Structure formats: structure tokens, C-alpha cells
Amino acid sequence: MKRKEAIKGICACVALGAGVTIQSCTSIPMIDHNIMNSKIIVQKSVFIEESFVLIQNERLPASLGVLRSEKKYFAHLLLCTHKSCELQAAGKFLVCPCHGSEFDQKGNVLTGPAMDGLMALPILETASEIEINVKGIIA
Ligand code: FES
Image (cartoon, rainbow, N blue to C red; front, side):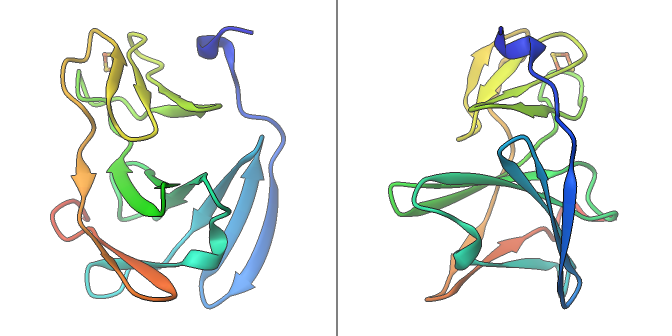
């Protein structure tokens, strides 16, 4: 199957309390998360060694993609930098349904027409959590 042909599978939801819900679509967890003081706080326990999760909230213009790689965390707004369509996760890639741009999970452009990488969001890391600052992008 080509990357662009990948589609979301059937989703299952798990409510974890405190406003957190995890959906599993294919192998990428989707987390509904509250925003408090312009921050989204994610427990590190959500991540497995090397993993990628999607975060959504109605105040965000699009989902966030959060990657744990080499013991570091990366958060990106999943809006295509070509003409702002929301990206879809397809395996290890983020694909734009509008004109076909592709990005890796660190926000780098792999295939155009997009020329620029995804918007990175600042992250503050504590022992058990990461805080993603969404101040400039929330409604
Ligand atoms: S809006 Fe994404 S490739 Fe055009």
C-alpha cells in the first residue's frame, strides 16, 4: 500500500478521566486533551519508547502530532504549510489530502508542493509530563 493510500481504521475510545480520552486509530493513539493556561499537559506514560501520538482539542486549529524520539519530545501543529489543510497520519508519515505534500513525524517536508516544515510548538519537560505551549494557536 502506498503512503498516500493509507486510511484511518475503525477507532476505539477509552476514557481516562480528568478530561482525557484516548482513541486508537490504526496504531496511532488520538488523545482528546484539555487546555489549561494555554498549555496541554501530557503524561509521559502515554509514550512507548519511540512513539507518536495525536492530540486534539476543539480550540486547536488542527490536531497536534507529538513524537518521542531518542528520549526527546517534538510537538507540531498538523496544518500543511502549503495551503493549510489538516494533515492525516499514515504510518510514519503525515500526508496532506489537498495536494499530496508529505512530512515526517519531526515535521520535515518529504514531498512538496509544501516548501516549509511544520510549525513546532514549545515543550517544557518535567520528570513525568510534557507541557505543550499552544498560546499562539488556540481560539
Ligand atoms: S495544502 Fe497541503 S499540499 Fe497543498
